[in-house]
Image (cartoon, rainbow, N blue to C red):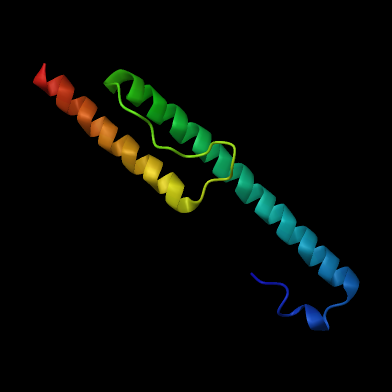
Length: 90
């Protein structure tokens, strides 16, 4: 939602409220993305340790993009398949 397009007809107080609401929403999204990143990286690291593989290279200090989270999830799925394959080979 872009508030700048319609802000010309809003009072200063209305704009401030909308921007505050948008900030709150974006802050919530940031927290969710960081929590998901931590969870995925923990799961990926466990699998990588078992399989002696390298985890995906994603900066854990920055807020990850949806694409980066998807890459980690894909790597986890690949690692899980490899783990099952190794278990069946033994």
